[in-house]
Length: 232
Ligand SMILES: Nc1nc2c(c(=O)[nH]1)N[C@H]1C(S)=C(S)[C@@H](COP(=O)(O)O)O[C@H]1N2
Ligand SMILES: [Mo]
Image 1 (spheres, rainbow, N blue to C red):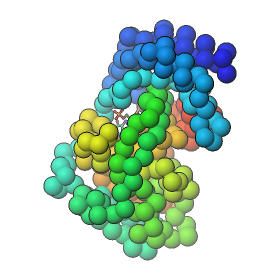
Image 2: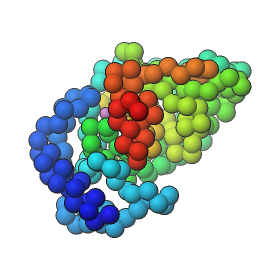
Image 3: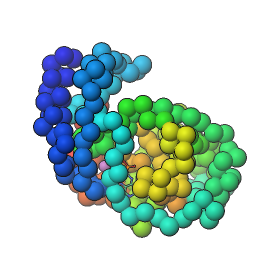
């Protein structure tokens, strides 16, 4: 544990303040205080996994990783849930707010190396929405379709986890455009490229469809604790 921390800290310091090559816009690391790094070293997740996945560095604030924003506003946004389902639906922003709301505090991990701990979100569990459309038996994958052709994909079993959700608010305020407003996906336990911003549709499919980054050299499974950054 201690040894791991030293390695990750050295890597972190080397990157601190510098520009990193990212699969979005270039970002800048903001260094956590020594006290916080220390507290981090002592902590593990309730599931026993290390708080910081291997090769990740904690940052103070969420980074804007770019991408091409959608033009939807809360007034005209909607999400279509369709594909291998019994009952396809379209939900407006208002309809989303009328579903059961959850407040989730979670860590998010960008494949470029930064981790934001204890990020606070409000939204609706994806599971709640998947239950509404009733997937058919062959509905095994979820494809997120976002503005300007961005997509990401996960097995439906991942999408149904308790901590996977569509977010409309971040730390109690409406999501900013840069971070995916009106609504984005958040999948805390996968690298952040799975968490599509500017969400437009959720498609249930029988076959997997590798998404934007998944078909450009990044891992399809994207498990940060297995350090699945590249195809495995
Ligand atoms: N629509 C869309 N969603 C996206 C992206 C994108 O380019 N377009 N980039 C992904 C990547 S690589 C990351 S790391 C996160 C970054 O989210 P953030 O900018 O809110 O930190 O969004 C993901 N979702
Ligand atoms: Mo990313």
